[in-house]
Length: 193
Image (cartoon, rainbow, N blue to C red; front, side, top):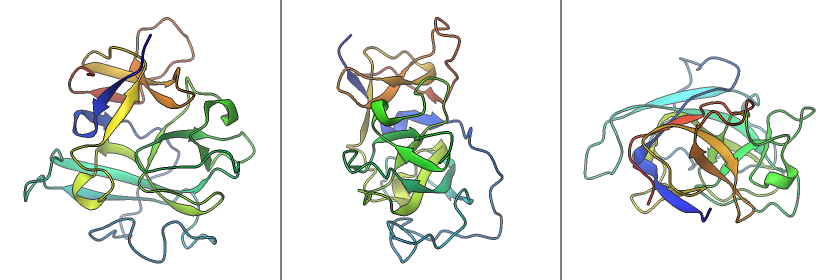
């Protein structure tokens, strides 16, 4: 099936990553701005979670609700260049908190928790990734009204799972129950285009 797309504002992610949100950690405004994102050395413990409330104001294309972020390491594979808006999964069982956007380099695609890269990431560097809730359009400049996630063909409104796409990327597909490893990683609020 040919790949299609799902608008960022039409996707809500299920946070399937271990750990709780740190209520004492505040991410202000631009989550990718600062000395803690896309850095060579981790400035937070890997796996730390934080959340923000998206107000959907000032002409943003966000939905109202919480967005959850997790602090992870971008793939150490130099062939897996990571860009904003790309869907990633754990790279290996040894490096669970290291994520990749390359389905051939991933631990597995179906059944794995997903994150979305908030910006281009340097190989092996650390930063924040969107892991749950509404798409944080107002807090992440690279995720705007034009952002769309690749899907494996027509995705209907409802539960979605991670899929290995024809374009050698990780994207979303409808949860149809045909693969016992599939798990609902999110919910599509509208059909793909």
